[in-house]
Image (cartoon, rainbow, N blue to C red):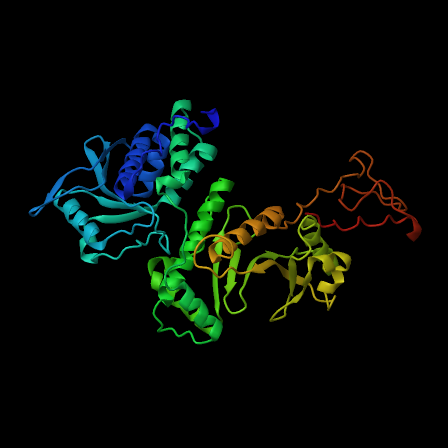
Length: 467
């Protein structure tokens, strides 16, 4: 036997996983154990659930009696701080196994009877809106017990962020967290990525293409929910690589009432055949806007940037073009002018580099803002792989951020410069060419007043715009 076929020993092995039950048990035990071993990671996850800071305890398969039945939640988390404790039951699903409403309602009843604070679910399902649970339960059961959900993608992202960017104080704990990351990234762990646009995707896609989609059609709500879930997934993926909190943009009203955004997306898909969302990336010039046109089968990412407030129109355009010197030539640049409505002048970057005036059909109008956009063909398949909608959206967002957005900086005015005081001292005040003596120095005085216009110095040229 050659060494290439040997399996390296791991703290959390993936070998020996037989069936969904073993997969869930191992994933639950590994996660809860690492939460107690790596304090920073455990605190990150429990804080998002509303737990106080304190001593963390975790258990698996704790038995409870509910009526005549004996139930075994997958896990239990308890945080103690002095006399106070916070407790949550944990239900875990791996692979494509969905959460069950009846099971969750039973655990909510157990939590209420025992005075627990919450029920936490973990699965590969990603809610369309932050804070919204992917499984419907009787809302009356949530009056005294909170229901939280974490996707495996979210947990993996938090683990990577903690280890690679936020840091772990203890070297051994950092290694343990790395072993959890390695385990969750393995295909056999059951912690899968976002892999499906749902059962209604093909039907909805074809109806949009044919122009027959109606707001009342079955499956439309699922499609728009999966699109929002996809945006959350790619935000987590991008944030994991950047070490930043990348999130979809949702208004406070939409966060409080998710049905508002769902209705707006459904109406947009019916009327224009498009799905649109925004992603906020810290310290960038603006939100990254993603538009999927199902009729044209095309995807577009764009960002809007405010134009400089000073300089000639051509100078302002050149300010943007200098920042895009490494960007591909098929990027589209659009200029919106002040005091004008509708679409602005647009051209490809390769043409604008040769002649910036192509973006200024009316040189007298000052640019108000710019839009930089990148388009690509849209995948149509519901799953992952070549030609899939999921991969085409993810790839375009990565390309647009890497080739465009990370190189753009917002314009800012230069601070005012202090004028040099080159006047005479108070002991010898005088004004050249005059018999009068000055009694005090003035900022308008100079060492010598020019005697002819030819001696008048030129004004300092206006500051040129730079990236």
